[in-house]
Image 1: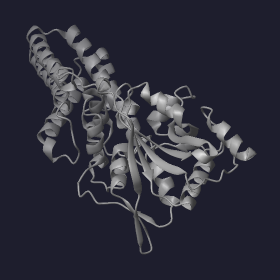
Image 2: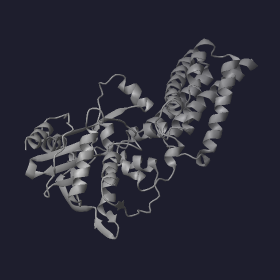
Image 3: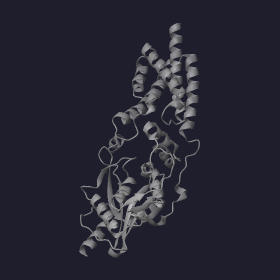
Image 4: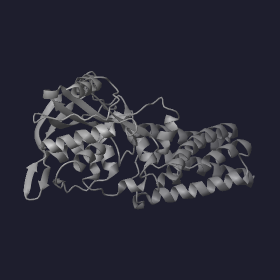
Length: 398
């Protein structure tokens, strides 16, 4: 009894340090999958969340195991995040605390009570406790393959007797398709993600791979069964809505506040500026404009280059956006300031113009989804290179 009381007290504290002591669950115990609705106030919360609840009133136990714990203040967090070496943790804390934390943010929570034997429940609890020990609780997070949704699924699959059989959806979807669903109201987030994930994100994935999105795991559990020999039972015995999502908290970006609209405005400005600078031969203004434009493009290209060749993030290499955004543009931008009308700058602009024209003509042949919103920015780079080629020829023909 002392062990049970100790176990209960430990889990009432936030950020629990779990001991290796076991608690024996009773027949009245329940193991549930908790699925949170998306929250638009943080990018990482746009995709929802999954956790496991263990509830046994007879031993005063009601805890949630959460695999989505991370620390923004940890050393080199942003660098490790970009490199794909972010460490997440699993932690257990009281269900009431978990519920109140999300209720205050207007996040909905659905509970799916699993149809498990007592031994299966015990095995799952023991595995979760073992995972949450200080020496085991940290894991290397991977957005597509190993996250807060796939971890609970894998724990459940490994600790039941028999195998879970899922109903096939027969829907051909890719990682990018699912990401687009989650960020449909956030065009700037979608724009940024489509810049950095490459062609591998457009390969069709299996239903099991779709479970990295919590809502997809929830739906796959609805009709799933457990097959043990000749016996088949439903995986979910009941489903409860614990919290309703606050619809007032669902944000949709205004139609004009999108990368495409800003891109079209910028393209129009670039066309007007290029025409005036060509007619009036405004070298200083052109030099400054091109330096800023190509330096910004080159900085974005450096991030893509880093993700392709130095990051362990999945689906970042190959990335065809590297054609129009690459680190060479940083070198070119610096060269513009030093020798704006040199033949080296002319050669760069000539080659860049030709590459971008071919890239745009081959748009629908490229084996990667490319945002339509990219086109105005590509055209702006193309127009600036083309204008500089014409300026060089005009000045050298006089």
